[in-house]
Image (cartoon, rainbow, N blue to C red; front, side):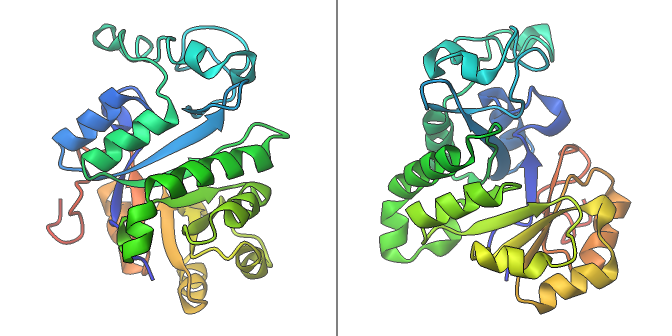
Length: 254
């Protein structure tokens, strides 16, 4: 069921560059990755930005909530110094520019819709609308393997994305799929389940696959564990350790 790349660089460059930055994308490319997972949320003015946390202070210098700032204000903020002095010029990327870079460089995207509390619908709609417009040609020509995959823990965001862009694939993020996970996933017409590998079992992996869903895991950083999961039938995963687990892992052993 999984028609996309098998190994994704988590937030761009994993542990080798500041997360969710252009430097991260370039670092992943240095290691041969042409598939990436990253997070998108909305700024105060509704502009989508590439950030994981809804607040500043961990990876972005500053204080307060993402919604305290407009998109262009965030796009001037330091998003790299926390990682190292060499990255002090890295700023918070705007989603449109980040996605354009990925598309221009042949990087497949798993876009996590990461709404702040209360903004699920707006975030899902915005991300889906932009992604659909960006890939209109691929949709028209049936190049389905090139389409980005929209994932989220928020079913409201996924449903909003489905309404705006029903022809873009969606995936349900579930740290530990609960009883009744299948009807939940079908309610948003998801094509894949994204599970925390720590909570996955062989039986659950088989149930997901038998139900016709793609099966993806996050965030797998040990080669031995990656090999085990692939043996269970896991079709793809993301990793922080792009130096240990390459894009061809499982085929070449590295």
